[in-house]
Length: 274
Image (cartoon, rainbow, N blue to C red):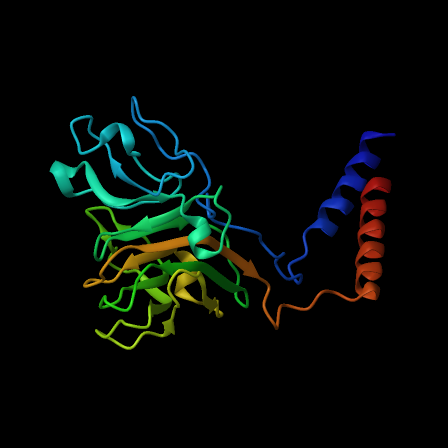
């Protein structure tokens, strides 16, 4: 096959592969370690979680509290460690999945620090008409004698503030959010009421518009324990996906493809003969 024919065929295939009228493909999980089952970030001497381990908090300094029985971070996720000179916080991983109706062998995120934001920021090319969906399971303990506990779930265009990991950066845009609490919480009326010792699935969505300023920003998925909570919040099965949406750009009809292909072949043949 001559070089000219090879170039002609390559041009036809490349042109057919580029389809500006086609909707973006559905994207799968955009988060890293959304099920929290990846091995934790570990410092020297620290060990992976064993089952059952219960809650395992974050301590990054060997002189910190229970260093050898702690972890140094949750893979893929960001949160501040301001206690004990910037090395510790009561946020980490738990293996108490079976308490909330999940397998004992799995890990989940837990947070027992008021207003501590746990987040993950992703970059992805989005298009107008796409629908972004974020889901996560929320669980709490509790009994009739306590005053309840609550949390917040966020979907934000932008990042966290690098100087304050518990806040979003200036210029960030809140896409969707909700609050969740168990039945005895009284400090505010939550969007979702979650039964004790059973995961409740939470869902946020956002549809990108034409000329949407959020198309130019990264996306941050965030979770937070509400101030005043009497005990920890537990989070699992975090999922962030995108869908072309209910009204994507139309896919060209088969006849349009035939005409386009024929025109490209004629144009390539003219170039070849010329």
